[in-house]
Image (cartoon, rainbow, N blue to C red; front, side, top):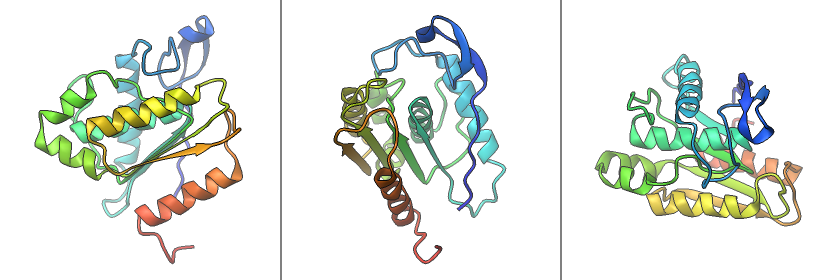
Length: 195
């Protein structure tokens, strides 16, 4: 396994009063109900996909993230399923796995309708493995946002979806969660015997 951990660019973030920090896109609210920064989402998803497109063709590519990184990974999952970004440009890579920890789904409104109109998008959505996990005591991205994210993806046709709940856990990861991520990836990507 090759882990690539890019850092988001520095940009002003509305939820922080316009304070500039590393962020994949501008967020006015950390939930599916907030306004979506389509330009920022598309630019960051394209940056990540272009970066990953340089990997050899036999590499099984996945995207994962925590908090805003999870939101970016899940937005990338929807772009992969649709075959295009929100701006209509083609999505250039085929994802084999997506992991979202303590995040939310940007662009969830209308996602089901976008996927249902294309049998190819519905097929890609149904086959893409996604692992979501969220702590019940998350005070940054509330647990209900994680639940809503899982529901929105499921309703939109993402059938290969796992949602894990972590009782008493806040906006951070714990070793048990990371072990479960590794086990899930090993099973989904056929990595048994590669340890």
